[in-house]
Image (cartoon, rainbow, N blue to C red):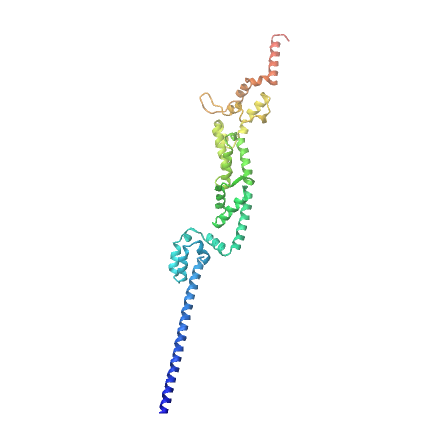
Length: 326
């Protein structure tokens, strides 16, 4: 009886041991399976986040663009295809260039690096604008430059943004030099009185914007001169200045009326009338110099000149000689 009890106890012990071993194996298997599942999930998440990162999407970007949260979660879940398709439908993807995306990401994740790059951009832009002659308040420039950099503008786009900002206070440098030369050019064609400050302010802006050249403005000036002095249109269109054309008339006025030639401007009514001469049948033409000189000697101003006195004295002498008085 005792032997039977011992055998039974041994059997029970063996069964318990076997069960414990089986339970341990099952527990280990379950643990291993859970670990494998967790690793697989983490690997999937890492893979999805890597895919998101390849499109520039990170946690830092989600606060600025809430529409990307759902896209990011799809990437994390391993639904790369679905996430990519959803990304292509977002305003962020459709409306931002690669440069803008890269700079925004850098600003959010590496603010110090972004600020350094921005300052370099401002320095280069300021040097370029100074060389062209733009005058603008520093604070206004800094705001415009920061916006231009963030939006990925090129130099031409930045220049246009400055132009329409209303912040330009004046022009110097190349633009001022070109404008000054063009004003002299307009004066040489006798039309500076028609070109007011508003005209030149607009031309300075157009030169800066690159929508017009100095040659274009010179042609405008010649066209206006051709209209003002139609009798000389062909010469003007060939580049002959009104200064050159008017020199004979000015010389006559200086000689006959004893005036300083440099003081005679195109506002003088006699000179302007000569340059805008119209024949009796109403056609623009060139006034003969002899006719112009005759008109000058008929003017009240001439009688008070030494020319007039000498002419009268000479005539009086001749009359007296003809009469035999002298």
